[in-house]
Image (cartoon, rainbow, N blue to C red; front, top):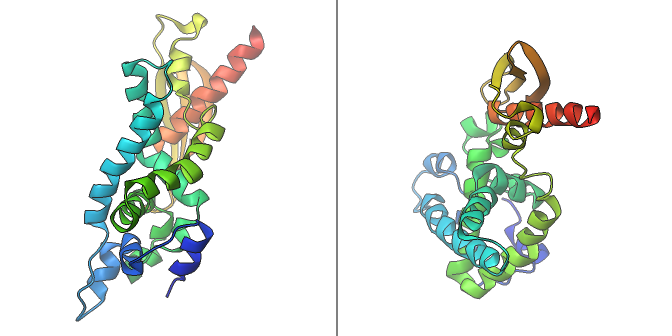
Length: 228
């Protein structure tokens, strides 16, 4: 069994009910394989954690007095999207604690963004239910906000929008073309090119089409900026 007490101690989280934190890491595939138990998977916790995290991030952005309502909404969407939650969870090594069924273990479910990001939200809910909103807020401000502030310049930049707005490309059509797709379902690799007309502006590689497109746009921008 995973050492959840060690994880909570490392994160400086006190607890009353260790089981609720264990539940945060229980994927439905794990629970379904445990016969004659009253275990519950983390789906309900994930639902609650989503709302709690959104509230905390909304308050954090609200305190940035220079942001408009539209800017706050856009940033919040980026900070609580699946890829962002997956990043937070991986940095905290939550993927090492996920409880999975045999099938998900074989398909490396502990590296799947959908599973790991749900665990992160469920963990937020566990803190909220066990220790209250202030403790959940403390966790986010101590563990997640530094990641956001450190990484926001790179991790959450919308390179596709920046490329479209590049002076040389304004009013020009930009297309993303999937050049290659390899790997098994749980470990895909995509190679994408971004083109303007017939000209290839840049290429990118990622574990999803979206990631590959973003990297292609970033590489295209780097090339264009060198010409200036």
